[in-house]
Image (cartoon, rainbow, N blue to C red):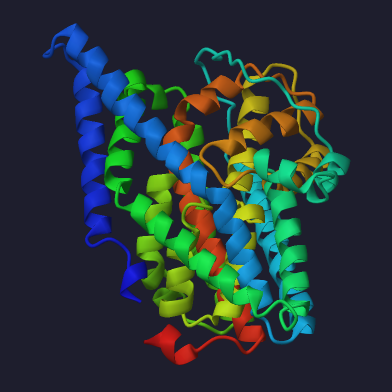
Length: 419
């Protein structure tokens, strides 16, 4: 369908925007070539304003996109008993990969004694620790006000409402004159809106990268270089090792073909830092290039954008070890490691699929373990770039689980996958 084709040369243009943002941002931060008023105008009304507009456009479409994707996917299922099987496998695989991801982070953090050699100053932060618990997370799945969940961007509640609505729509389709078709059409409309926003992705990336570099420079990576490099290593290791393993073991699929077809999706996720905003690109690739049937992909991908946060879990595990390591008097033992795994899985499920939301939920883990929040400013300072990489890992996990669930449900066209 040409109306839902991705913008031409998007990959090339996003890379150009990224490079230009780095170059101009560095020019502003490190030199005094331009007059001060011109630098301030460029930083405020080009970089900051452009970046904020792009982020707002992404947030604007997240809620309706998740709602209509899930409703249309569920309402199109011919066998509702199959929904239970798909949901069970989807949630189970997402929780498994997230738990494995944070376990990898803790293992490598312990192996390298992360944070032990830190000698920089601890940066303060204005973030307040949140009082959240497993009880609170569960209650967010069952909101008391349907419209309140949409207004508050309660993604767990929205997923539950969407599933409930989709099941009811499926059951009453014969007496509502085929109302499910209308939701499929509305889903197509919102997919088109996202593709329209995607056309501005190169400019948005230019502004977001430029804002960061113009205000922070690149020297800030020095104090937390060990944390940054280890996080990048664990993310890439999880991407290549874990996803290759589950694709080969559970679905007997070729990981090389999978990664090749996912490269554009991962780049777009990198540019937006939002799993939810990447849903249409992920769905298109999963269904058209990887051969996953629509009824499976339309359920697994939106749910994954909400609860599958492997990259976020890795960050939370490593950040917790790093902050504990640089804070005098804090020792983490096996009990604390088990707590971190549990909390990282739970909080990553409740993390909004928008840029840097994982930093907020990190305060929950630190608070539960009694670790001071002051040092979270160090993590926050370098999080923008790392968040982009984490999102790429997350969407790759969404697609991998989609392929596995589709294969076990006989909803995968392997000729398309292997083409």
